[in-house]
Image (tube, rainbow, N blue to C red):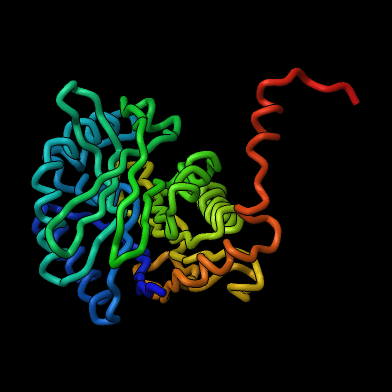
Length: 303
């Protein structure tokens, strides 16, 4: 049996005027998680969005210019950002996960990359695989590989926002041994927030694992005239079966109040093993790969 205490955050989108201001904000949230004896803190997708306020011309940023600001500002701070976040994880003795930022690769392409900053200084990363239309318009390219790592002995993977809405990758991660999928998110309306929430429940149910969600919430007033307003709430989902004994599949959830805070949950991987060993449908024991392959290869059947 392995126990992992996770703190999933609702991280407030503020006007962060510098990396130092941003670092203090993250440190405050990490301190709260550490005070709850959490071993893993999950932060949202594009947690750096508040740093748009550090743009030299942020007051003049209009919707038509915001893509340019994303492309220029966030890759510029990417390396320093990783150093800052890794330092916070070490200082508080807690792994910090999710917390994606836009980075530029050596070939000039852009990625929306999430991280796991381990408390020992190691850093793992995962590029977003399924991009939204605004991300594509921004010039971001999708990732093409998945990473599975361990935090305190628990097999952990990252699926960024829309990634959790696509079942194929999560199933592959489950078959590789994933016990916890982390889903950092940034959504600006209830439809998007519900897609992430329902996707998290579905992936937890069909793959018999934990799924944790961390959203960005609130607004920093940018861009001028049409500010981004982020929504959603932090939660941890479980399978819907007798082993976990939760009829709604919600192990923990923050109040849906669009305010900063954390929700804390204790994850027991022995329940994942027991659920997979003796599942109620659906369950990994009941999947039929041969059938699915035959359907893919066969011609449509008349009925």
